[in-house]
Image 1 (cartoon, rainbow over the protein chains, first blue to last red):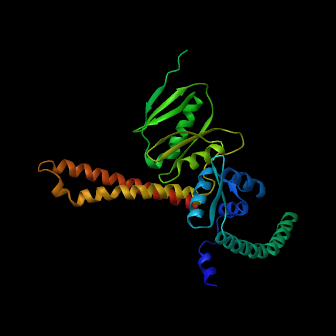
Image 2 (cartoon, each protein chain N blue to C red):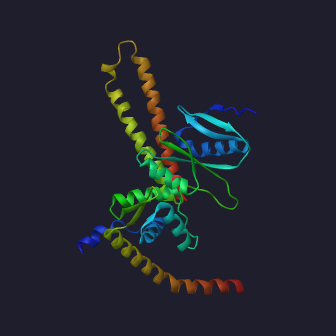
Image 3 (cartoon, rainbow over the protein chains, first blue to last red):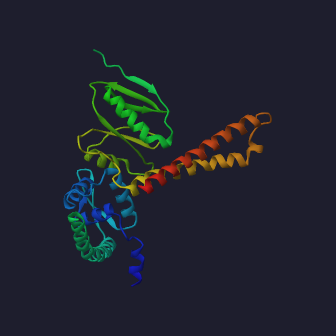
Length: 118
Length: 173
């Protein structure tokens, strides 16, 4: 329980950090992360090298990711257990957000349709 | 035909990084491609075919350079040079795509915060000088040194205000 409170300080993650951490479920180097994020987010999120470098530095400093190997001079990172816990916390938050949003979305679509008919 | 390096001296303040990026792009449109940056802000251009290069400036003073440049290189950014913490990158413009090294507001603000931290650190010796001015300056030189230090201090405060305003502007978007 105490542990959970400590991890809460990282939440909510920014959209970029969330996707970077999602990508790091497997070991990847920086450019690999950029490509994967663009692909899994259906091109809604693009991570530039400046943004990624900063995210890598702070995530590593906080012990949420760690270097696991090196591939052709490129360092590969992966989530640590602490990082996995934080990511679970973020996904839970997103689930609540989306559960709240979906019924409202239906209402909104109906309202917008009625508006068009008038 | 011999390619001659073109040297230009142009001053940009720390808060004018976007104006500098735009100027370098204009130069590339005219066929002048940045090849080196010397201290203090002497730009060397290699003449060539006009091209549309997007330039981006990053500010970093505490990083593992090899990893850093590798990451930018992998994502298509050519490193053109470095000058007191500012790293110059370029990439050929692509139609319908905006090229950015910072893709969200938080990380873009991070760049200006690093700049502020650096200015803050630089301010310490200046502050120390002011506090000890009476002991440090030989008699007669006082007014000149005082004036110089005062000017420097005003410039510092102005720079910090400009960067803070930039951060506020970014937060509003």
